[in-house]
Length: 63
Image (cartoon, rainbow, N blue to C red):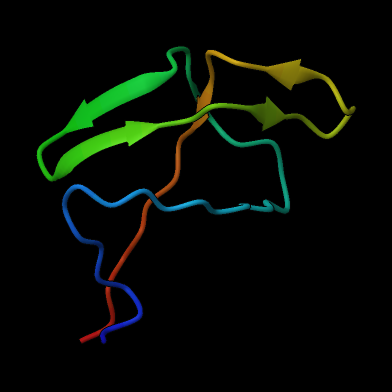
């Protein structure tokens, strides 16, 4: 299996750590051209929890 491939109708759980404060989408679900991204919880660098934020990230496959 390609480690960067995601499959439809399957849930994935990731922890993403950034080196700086990321840009934020102020929503709990985001529709994209490639599918839908949901975020159930976001914890900022100060430990504050948000339930309607999605960090702006880009996932890229390796060719």
